[in-house]
Length: 423
Image 1 (tube, helix red, strand yellow):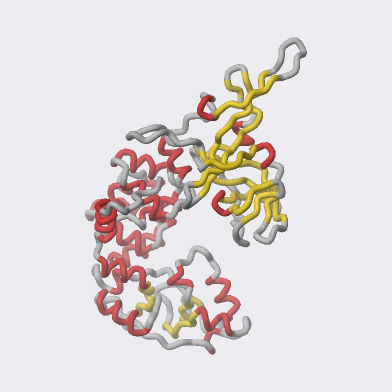
Image 2 (cartoon, rainbow, N blue to C red):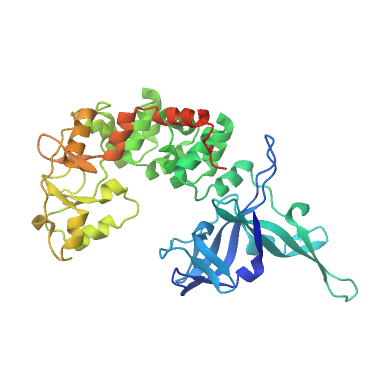
């Protein structure tokens, strides 16, 4: 269902408002992606707004369009209080209306403004480019003339990024599971092209949502430099799982793409049998010493790169504070950290939890996690040194079987009520 029309030139002067309505910046540009061409009996889609560029706290940031609850003459008001202050970096396939479309010459006319229409399908809403305001300079001192055209009637409005660059831009803020569904629906060549168009972190997150077989088919087509960047963004245990599906020759090629420290960690994980605690564990956990404080622990847990199952507890050990550590002493759970004063040392808050050996079976790990209601369980060697932790999500993956994602996809495809992949 179509709704109101707004014009980009006006929006680019509006304040960015927090959820309470207070200004926190100013919108300076709008980010759009080209629409999909007509194919497979489906009509072409219009170019869509994916977000706003705003000046805030002396930096230029990106604000996802889905995070804006209201857009009117007062400004763009966010739905929630949190703001991503990472500097904005345009991605391949994305187009900045102010920088790239306004003042663009098309034939003997110049784009003077872009009209965006609010669209809703009952479940979600978005903005599409609907109108283009074109100006033509008058001759012999006459005033310029203007006309309003439908966007689809204006050829050359966008440059021609590769179709996969545009697709990657459209998928900018889709959940990795949804991006994985899109990748599965593509033939092999286009899968690789889309993988090339995704940035390293995005591709790493998507790979973790694919089956090992699908991961291998994508990764083996990447060059060494790209592999190094992608592996840097992946969890060590996920890299080890991926390499475990390859031949020895392929493993060596992939390991050679890593730096020495990462290679040593992954080789250690590959040395454990599949289906054991060692084969399931991640060596990347929050590790602090007994004299570290509650404030230090909370600062570590605030890091958004930690997955939830890891960020809920701090593993306290003697030095060194990197796996394999010194003697493991215990854990401090997040709820306890929130109840105690910031200056209190962790040694006063230790919770005695069960530990498992790296040789314990996956079933045994699942029993321990369930028995003690844990999100992660420490893995220690015979000397009591912490080697890593097994998280409940990795155990669930293991219990469901290595091909559960493929089976889930097949079940969804056979279900007439299924909504299908993201579009």
